[in-house]
Amino acid sequence: CAGEENWVDSRTIYVGHREPPPGAEAYIPQRHPDNRIVSSKYTFWNFIPKNLFEQFRRIANFYFLIIFLVQLIIDTPTSPVTSGLPLFFVITVTAIKQGYEDWLRHKADNAMNQCPVHFIQHGKLVRKQSRKLRVGDIVMVKEDETFPCDLIFLSSSRGDGTCHVTTASLDGESSHKVPCLSFGAMHGAPWLQTQCSRGLRRNRGSWAGHTAPHFDSPHIPPLPVPPQGP
Image: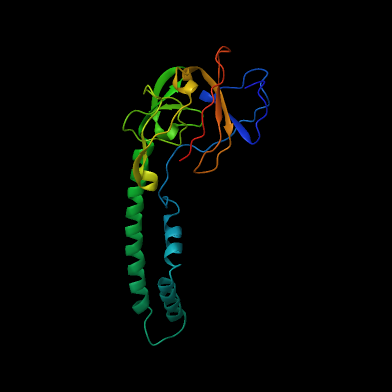
């Protein structure tokens, strides 16, 4: 990307995690989170304290806890067991139920994170797990496959440069969306030779602006890719 004008509020992504070429503008490597999906609430270490905290945030449980402590500290005509035993039973059963549900979430997350994904590395098609994807990877998605991460549409096997996408898992909309490519992007764009890509910064959950891929070969001009959104 050396010699390009400075884009306002833009960022540069080097495809394949390459180093900037000699003479390029100052580039500060960015740290991005990994591609793991985590929908679970608890871990093995924080389950007991976090679950107890959430349960005693409920007014009913907190009320019976206060009653139990009062009966335990102060000499009362009723035994603390009368309020402590039901409270212990409710807390235990609820914790077991929530722990089992969270364990199922962990299993679903592991299955999703280990799904095989095909991406381009050093000009070859390589297969690895979804959780190992990083920002800058070029991913190949086949028909009827699920997107493993947020993607920018670069190329299509269809002659008209389109693809049909459903977002039912995100917004419940079952109708097909048809993102289109620019003329240069859909006609023989050499994505195996892509060096870096510049584009506007994106907000979480949406992307707006333009991105311009730059290639290793000096004979290939940058190809603009139109803005794409969710």
